[in-house]
Length: 234
Image (cartoon, rainbow, N blue to C red; front, side, top):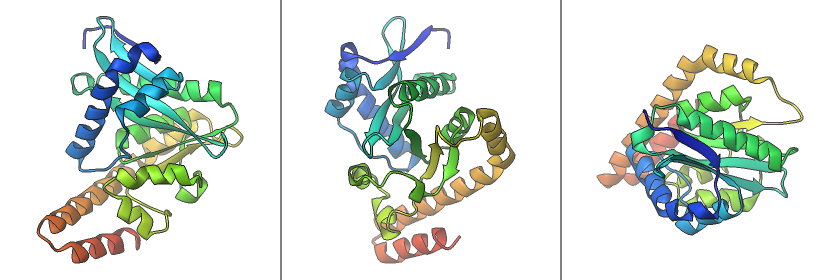
């Protein structure tokens, strides 16, 4: 990509991108066959106005990518959410730059907070590991009810609730400023086990597609039961 890309903290002057961003979030989730907590253009615009988002644009003003901050549990936890890159700029390395900037912004605003994320993407897991995140169980994340309520719009919400929020198709990753490995160590750990992560995530996605197919043919109870039995007896 020859165009110069600028990655910076978003502000009120960027709210006109909100609809484009949320539309792309929804389209991307559908293309992957996975779910995300749906956000409205108004919600995304508010994050921009509060200085709790990072945006990437070309020097000509074309939208490239986006990510925002959510705060939970009386500022004990911070989530870097909604990472999305325009299809025309994917595989350019801009996602990694956005993640690094939103991570740094989170540390600047909430230096004592634990930073976490939920993802179904191996590429995002790799980026997170290079920043010092580690895979964790859901029990180590915030117990803020408002956060988990945001998952209601995800297509996998019934799987999450069926296990009392202890597991789902997303992988949980956490950076604890008070107790963490150095990024070099977590990156090496991910590299060592990347094939295992990749295989596991592909199996999960495959099972999800089978579940959706069964729903489309009307065999809902059987498909859901088989999926849950497979995942939560691993």
